[in-house]
Length: 145
Image 1 (cartoon, rainbow, N blue to C red):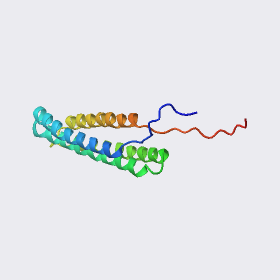
Image 2 (image 1 turned 30 degrees about the vertical axis):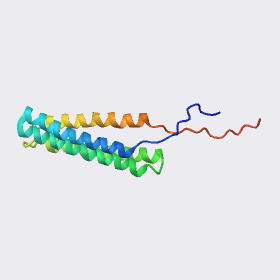
Image 3 (image 1 turned 60 degrees about the vertical axis):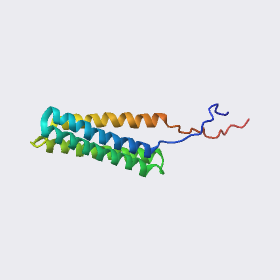
Image 4 (image 1 turned 180 degrees about the horizontal axis):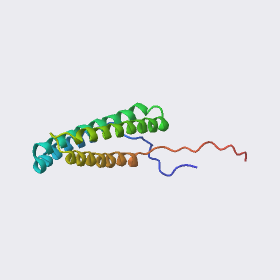
């Protein structure tokens, strides 16, 4: 049985995702920094810049984990992604605890910047996965006709 859609299969474009996440980090730093400065002064600026730096670091580790596991198949990629997300959640929790006492930056601006980065990355990564054409081959049939 042939597939009526003869478009060749292709995977996820990791380079494109990394470039888009880099632009998102830059937009978070510039836009968030300006908004943070206008709302909370220099503490808001530093909160937004710190939030953009943390999310940029997290974007880079996700892209690296997926890139390193691409040759190993989906199970390896899922394992790498789950491990990296768990480590990032622990680091983010520690950052929230450590930055809560900091007076040089505004913690709510930091949190909003991180939240905007997470939502933006979900949109970018989700769109990339949804648009990927991953081939599906049925296993050979062992039926004797």
